[in-house]
Image (cartoon, rainbow, N blue to C red; front, side, top):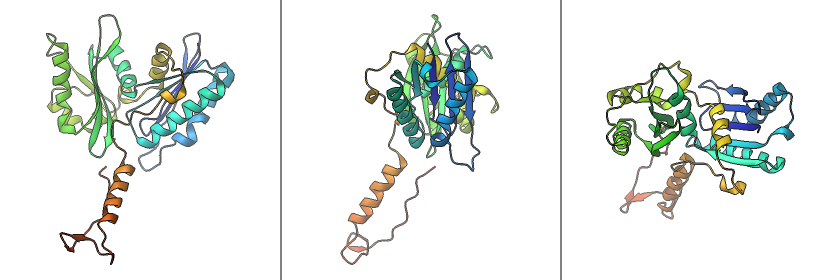
Length: 273
């Protein structure tokens, strides 16, 4: 089975092509901080490039796998829409997988420190992180201990406590955190006793190869409409719109906003990054 997998949950665009012989081709686009993410403009071009390297065409693909997040609103929307469109046009299977699980699996299978308990942490902006806890079972499979959620950095350690409650008699195991959120909130995680690899570690990168691997092991959906982004929280644009509408409703007929019948001072709303 040939699987095309990609993830757009972060600023990066990651694409992989898992071939029938077990080999994998992959490509990444990692924009600079000052650059806009290239999900919409780079995703299909990168996929086409991998097909060219493999010497096959789009018709050879058997399955599309896409990371559902949680992650950036625009990135997830582009990724899921592209996956659904490709699967429909090519008449192939479509699967969606957790981006946090895809981040965790390579770390769980790594022999760098023998850790079998991992926090997958992605920078959620607004001063928060998307986080979930996973462990490697004796059967070599990945088990989710704490489902994805958005937390303030000082609350990340609570996920370990919740996970160890699920584990029970295995409390005190060594934990490591990986992902761009682990890099950003390293101090908070280390204060909670969680190890964080060096910033340069490849374990912090969300791997499209892991998306491919998970996609090959996940049951395909009957309809593409079942594949939807996992935003895990409301997008900035929606919050800003509600704030704008609330301000408009507070405007009296002469256009001057009031609070308790008196002129009020308002400030422009800026989403917290």
